[in-house]
Length: 435
Ligand code: AMP
Image (cartoon, rainbow, N blue to C red):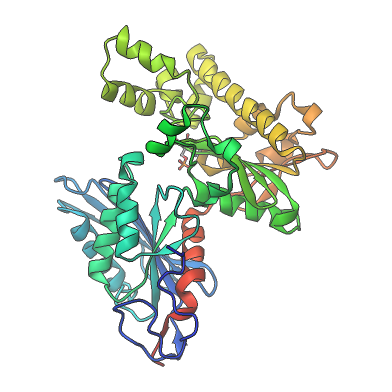
């Protein structure tokens, strides 16, 4: 299944690019991409104009299937009005996408517009097969479905989003952009667990890694910030949001990442434990009498920062630490200790590190986390400048002192733009409309 499976590079004039699509005559390029991130009961979306990477609209449908469903739509193009909100039951994903389509149409940005080049979908698990963004056809859908056992929470929702969007615009390329794709370059010695090989292979048990779209975007932007080509720099990316992961990126290619078969492995997160002795799970079952589902819920939803101190929002945790709250202080210290271990480990993996980069909600906003994470790591060439570290900005920025051996930086992530960029790079040039 090649990434450009449905693309017809030699036929730009007749524009029959995907099986079953109507030929369209080439003249004016279609330059917009709708990005959809479908969860089990929510859909997040953004409409982007790829000529200048600007956002035309963004929004969220949440609590799909409940009486209290809510759609919040924000027009972002110049001259359009302010935020709009709809409440009341939205029965399913099909109804949610129809509601999104109606809101976009009200702004003159309807998804039936010939300006729309493609719909880009975030798909969490692409296994080993999908190392690139891929135009969706029936075979691709089947393969994403085959991966449901390794991503039971995410892939079914992603599939529903793709199927619904396909029904709405059957003529339009739907592109799947996988969270795992950036990590498929990991060497076997980083990707394999040290367990029986036959069992691992039979059940596709290996380390896949997630947040790949963010790690790809941030590592590339970091190279830009350093004025170098991505192939010339080695970067440790720390994606610290409610979910959190670290990656070691060597010359633009991921060589290790902290999440594994599922997003549970690695750093301490908002509600996930991260690394843990697997025997803890046997103990919880045998001694505490918990079921597998209860243990799953404990480690994914009730652990991490929330399990340690009752809060998973770093703002609240810092407020409590500043007031002398000991539980919050210990939670913060455990979070930082794990982060430091990964910085050290990935320094060893990479050999030479040009930059350590913080991103996502915590990484972009929490100066105390950045300061504590590199404190005491001067021997690795790491330090932050107190003044630079507290500057608030949406721009990529260096926060290490001029004299530091390794750059420490903050690079805001933009997963939607990256999905749109990858989608458009794959199909954009093929989509043109009648002038
Ligand atoms: P994300 O998953 O990337 O959206 O990140 C969400 C998390 O970022 C929240 O749970 C907070 O812990 C954290 N966060 C957001 N804004 C701030 C802020 N101003 N200061 C500290 N942490 C923040």
